[in-house]
Image 1 (cartoon, rainbow, N blue to C red):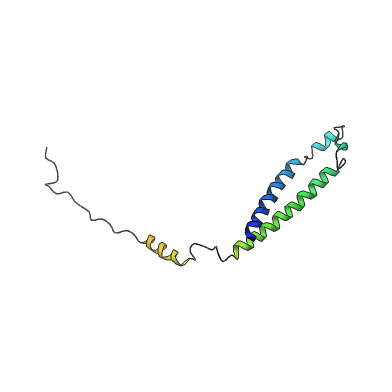
Image 2 (image 1 turned 90 degrees about the vertical axis):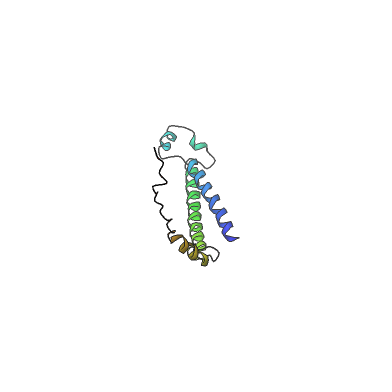
Length: 117
């Protein structure tokens, strides 16, 4: 249950980070704002939107990072998972697959098997 919740939070955080990064203006966009592109009329003010988006992206990045650590901890200490090699039946399958198959007896054609011309 907790693992599924953390996976869902990870996906939501990743999508939100992508959206917030795409919404932010690059450093070159500030030069256009100096010549009256109307950036001072935004909801957050002239610098407020970039500061708000930057802080929100930072918070989401921290959530994503901590969530990744939590998922790694849960998967490392999970009793349900584990390696295939650690399972009891895996040694039998691996041991059977590593033995070479017996070779088929070689048949050499005799004089009577060769067609006459």
